[in-house]
Image (cartoon, rainbow, N blue to C red; front, side, top):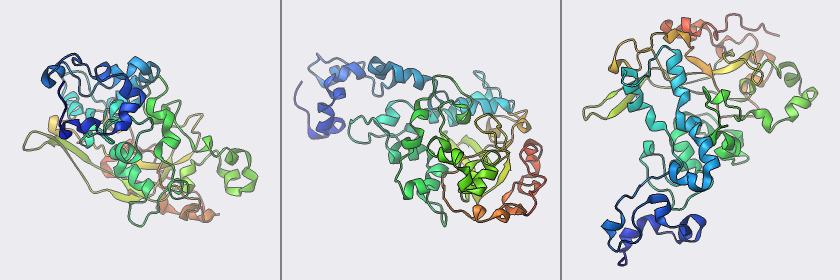
Length: 361
């Protein structure tokens, strides 16, 4: 094939790719096409621009099998919550159409973590065609998870400090969440039911064994989630609505987010998470989220609380609520009460609303 102009080499301008294992296997192994053709157009017949799983599985079948059942691939976290609210996601339904337009773009392929930015964020190769073993925190993780988690972790919320794991250790997302990215091999309902999900005690085992060094740990290790004492105010998003704009493109609108910190009863009590009190975050979903596509698409909306178990990413050693016992005890402001919940969502949240605030010490 004749030599290419510089502008035609944009995808492979970095010589590093040609020297690594992926560059040496040849383009057609992953992308298809015809390597014997002498003309550019003929060589590209049958080419797959974003081959991802099928091609990756040629060499990485063990990883792609895990990915196929991961939350990044199945979006089962979205599906199970919509179905629990009475949503019908069977093919051809109004909610299925809404899901396809507004939720499925969150599906992430191998390439959108290891080679390019996610399509949802506009796509584009991160570093020519270099395939990165560890996804870029900036261009991959925070590209999708930036509005809440990313801003918290990096300290982008006005007046709220960045997470201590970032400021003191410069830990990237995969330091904690590496195993979760590909999943456990089982389809799970959400990230908290994933058997390979990370917990604070995975690194901080001493908290479990040396409780006598800290009276608060000794007293509350089994009934308080770690974030109750060690996280700061975080972003809560309320009513989100989906529709199509004037050009027929999917769009979203939502009420302004609110910075707050709320403690409530644990909605997902389990052996791993036995706590009585946990930090709660409001979900963006509301009863009318998908009204553009039809009325009452979530017939059992009140069956699932709109204040959910949360793990804010702005962890600090010292916080306002762990300054002393009465920073929490008797402090109604930091507990989720009926006054904090929208009237139309009271029934959905009865199980997590705190009625009796712990007495002052």
